[in-house]
Amino acid sequence: MSGKGLRIVVLIKQVPDIEKVRFDVETGRIDRSSAPAETNPFDLHALEAAVQLKEKLGGSITVISMGPRQAESSLRDALARGADRAILLTDKRLAGADTIATSRALAAAIRKLGGFDLILCGEKTVDGDTGQVGPEVAEVLDIPHVAYVCEIREVTDDKITVVSDMGDKYLYEVKLPALLTVTRELNTPRLPTLRDVLKARKKQIEIWDADALAQYEDPDRFGIKGSKTIVMKVVIPGVEHRKGIIFRGEDAAEKLLEVLKEGGFVKP
Amino acid sequence: MTSGILVYAETSDSRIHPVSFELLGKAREIAEKLGLEVWSVIIGFDVKDRAKELIYYGADKVYVYDSEHLKDFNVLTYKDILVDLVKEIDPEIFLIGATPLGRSLAPRVAAALDTGLTADCTDLRVDEEGNLIQIRPAFTGNILAHIKTTSKPIMSTIRYKVMPMPKRDESRKGEIVIKNPPEKIDTRIKSLGRISKRTVNIADAEVIVSGGRGLKNKEDLKMLEELAKLLGGVLGVSRPLVDEGWIAKEHQVGFSGNTVKPKLYIACGISGSPQHLAGMRDSQIIVAINIDPSAPIFRHADYGVVGDLYEVVPKLISMIKRIKGVSGS
Image (cartoon, rainbow over all chains, first blue to last red; front, side):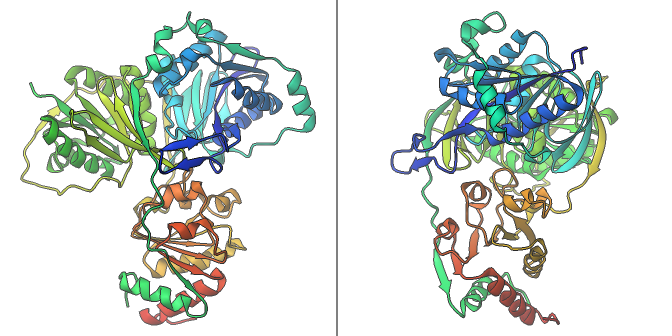
């Protein structure tokens, strides 16, 4: 930690509200137009952790996101929730990136910041579901990481002690700078007040393109060009073939019991 | 020299995680199609004797890194070992279990090797041209993406319990290669040990009885647990109950909890949000008990009871008790 407190970077992603996305079984198309965009729910816990650490230790919070222009609204929300600075990486040359190309762009942006102590991100996103970007960013930056952090115990000048939920729970002491991916149990994100929202409206969101990152990473490693995996096709599974037998009324429990007996689940 | 498919054998307390055996089975199948060998790598302490198990399950060659200072998982040291090994033996494909450990380790290895990594696959296929196609759910389990990797090695993490467990064959022969462990571990991460063990392993359960928002009180979970026990199973819950603080996350079924695939899944008072369905849709038999006939869960159920769980569940419990000859209510 420098004299200025903890310099925290939070990585966030804007995703469609997954409960409202429509999936067309016939065409294999994902229709996002019906679904409002929101910040990946896991990332809000990372941001909340950053705000709590700043409240305790002082310092600064920079939020970085990569995506289309409309992702500004997620960054604006992050400013309202307590971030000091927001940066959007947006450029055609960054689009279509797989996790490794995404990580290289994010890592380049973090390098451009000049210095940091701690990077926080959600354990995964609800659209990509990979959970890979956090550890990949850590590797590109050559810093340690701990995944599935469900508790932050202590932060000192050069170390952080955390609990990682890997099924069993493990305690790790990690040298700063480090990256943590966090679970939903870590905290309960607070909602911004109206005043915070209004204040955030006046703040500037910085827009960086691939050229802005070129000093820190070869732009050929960004976007589709830098990706090593290709989505060949997308299949939307129809509702599985389930029997769909419905029992109602007085003897429903009896009928269900018969099913359980036939399945060999009730042994005398 | 024939190239190979490398499988990471995950260990904890010197035991091999069963997902590693499942991966060996799948690797064997792909290896036959592509004319490759199956290799495995095991890292830990006191794991030398385990290497032959990996051969029994399908490995032709096992690389062993056995040392006391490798006892605790250190993501940086383990990553360094795997990166060096991959550079040395040059596998075509590298498979890692999509466990919490695997999901933390694999991305670092892939980034260090600058190769593509596909997360959380549920199937691997070889197409007509001999390409490996990795199939994985995305959008909270709503779609299946077919993915091809353009770099080498092709890396994927693969979910536990999606590939069949191969037969253990003690007559299989293979080579065990003892490697020199690194002299030092990376001290930027220090493991201070396990502080709590989960008490229930819901991913391995054959029967799960789960409760959701339809429950009125925390105490009512006991009723569902009683039913679970009578059926030889364990208690599960949907996310809202964990968020409420009623029960530990190890019981949570769903996208942000555990993915389960039991023989029997009974959802009580669970409406069936996409986030919950993502965690249980592959169960063999799904039963839903819900008072709301329009609850989405019924569309995913083999058997549905439209009714009050507070009537249906106690009735079921008492009938099962009678059959089992258990005294009491």
